[in-house]
Amino acid sequence: QKEVEQDPGPLSVPEGAIVSLNCTYSNSAFQYFMWYRQYSRKGPELLMYTYSSGNKEDGRFTAQVDKSSKYISLFIRDSQPSDSATYLCAMTYHGATNKLIFGTGTLLAVQP
Amino acid sequence: EAQVTQNPRYLITVTGKKLTVTCSQNMNHEYMSWYRQDPGLGLRQIYYSMNVEVTDKGDVPEGYKVSRKEKRNFPLILESPSPNQTSLYFCASRTGLGELFFGEGSRLTVL
Image 1 (cartoon, each protein chain N blue to C red):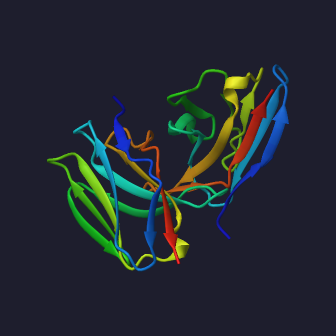
Image 2 (cartoon, each protein chain N blue to C red; image 1 turned 90 degrees about the horizontal axis):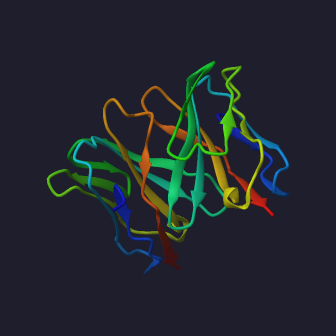
């Protein structure tokens, strides 16, 4: 079993939809949770960074962490065609921050 | 502009022919790392470096070498490439707060 599981998609939604992207994990020690966005032929870029449980909002993006269920989510409101990309979750824990564990990524397509 | 620069971006080579992928960052970050990205397997860490002359293995170090002689540069060396090293490679550097900045990737094909 992988430490981090992520549905690869592809996920296709119409413009303006609310998108929900999810990851589950098995290591209860994970404390730091990140979402990266990767456009085609580009390197990943950090979207959201959260510590422990709870929600964090940044514009149209909301990151949610539920440590009791070992489940993290990224919500995108009012999705735009420019949001079309692969979204990678990543996580680590205190004392192991040199090693970030990535999900395999979910490919999102927002149709105009 | 803050950036991580990798070269070459694309390379086709043959089994056994040594190659080096260069990586340079202009953000004065102490931490740098190399990842490979494969379909269905995601990003996996090859090596990382906490500072000049300090390197350590990641999850998939076999067949790779690195060196860190200067803070800004962190080359990845494949001494004797094999077809299973065909992959998309990313170099990254990290801020003190843990944010990784990735290069644009180097697509390597080993025939």
